[in-house]
Length: 171
Image 1 (tube, rainbow, N blue to C red):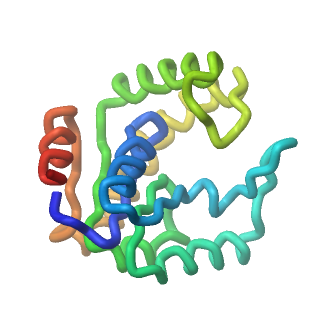
Image 2: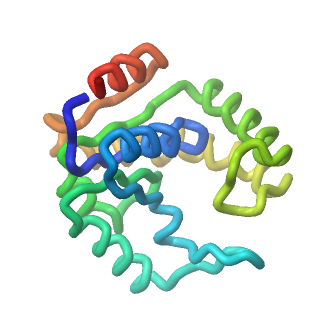
């Protein structure tokens, strides 16, 4: 992967957005942002939803930077990120792959083998399956339509082999 100054990574829960974003940001020593962290103010006692105004301000401050990796599944208020990105990566793994990853993540986070931005609960774990289905049925078609004007800078990754090839470009 050539060095992209601004990369936007999209995908459902369990698609590998955070993992790819962390590796890319680390490889190039550039800031990494999760759209969830614009939506939520992370607090020890539990997360609080930011106002739309604060969320949008935080997002706009991030995309004004010269370099960034942003990952998330939000649509609409994040359009400026798609416009400013040098490269967009849409992680479109099969639903069964994402389901397995959700289960694996829950186990690792419950055993404290992996850090989470939120307090992992059985309720959130169960919600992730619904979010995964909602992404497949509703969000994915919306994103594919939203990405039409950006085809030249968009890579859709559907298999682990394609992801490895994308990472191989990073060397």
